[in-house]
Length: 502
Image (tube, rainbow, N blue to C red; front, side, top):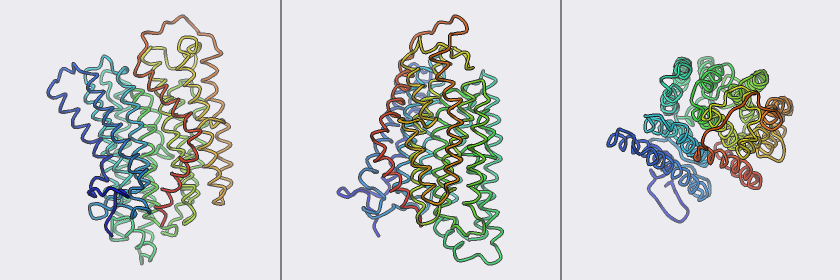
């Protein structure tokens, strides 16, 4: 069947990769411009190009998604390069999310890196990492999945260690790299075992082979699937490969922490959703749904309890991001075959809302670091009297992350937990609700410190970083605007998620 891009306008098949290509081309353009003028005398131009490229990727993904590209109504998923890549609604949904977060972080980084000489390298690394994430969302082969994972991870290691004169940043980058290298080896070995058992790396072929039974190799396939799950646990900061996240997020520049905790985490889930749902049947020699149930419960509980004991806001956000990985894992933990599209879509919708509210929270931390306010809760005391608009935005992020109504996080968690209940896993929803109640303790602590506590000492804020401020306010507005738009958001997410269910 000839693939169709648009209902009315026929475009070449390769243009389905335009959202990913826009990010890659923009990254190359930034490097080219910097090589022509290596003194970095045009920081606004570099940031402008990176922003425009990210927004172009967002616009293309949104355009294709709204036109039904790669969806059932226009001919189904578009397969490229021998079916190694596939562009469908789910791929476009996540590509739009990656591009939106990238644009936000690039804008915010303009002020954060105001005196840094290597802006071009920073922007290009971020764009290349986003390119890898876009490919991860479209990967239909285990080989492409591994390559895309590395394409996203390698620039991320460099971004974490970007502040070369900051020992904390360099240490965080080294730890992130070492644990990432270990998880990559586990992931690659798992892929090799799956290939040994099935004879294919294409996900639909792997599914067919495992469904038909692999005589004498069921154990090999099961161990391979278990190791592949370990690779995803690293990328999504899930237990037991979660311990890199607090170190990396704390040591990295705050905009990088925002990027990794939102876009990178969503990319890991995009790939995990496709690999497990499309590639591994439920009876593939291992009950991977049970595996993700255990991971979801342990990850959300450990993340929330650890976050509640932190004294630094940035480190608290790092541990809370682990807790949110546990919530997103419910999409796989409550997957029940043909009827599992709804809970999978609810998990995708939660990742979309999380992308805005968590990015905004880390950008507020970047604002505090820009003003040299400090990192502990006490350092934030009284900040609302000096930066009221940013503090209102931070309050929106905190209450939304906690899942309080009427913020976007409430609706995304509501649909996620209802999806788990409808799938017959009410106890997963109960554990999620209890953990959300626990998270209210430490999220509300930030709001209390900002608005009710008196400043410990005298301090003065510097000049207002316009771009960083604007990015925070935009993230807050986007989080609030998702309220009236949540009906279409959840419908779109569940619709595109259903298409990957065999």
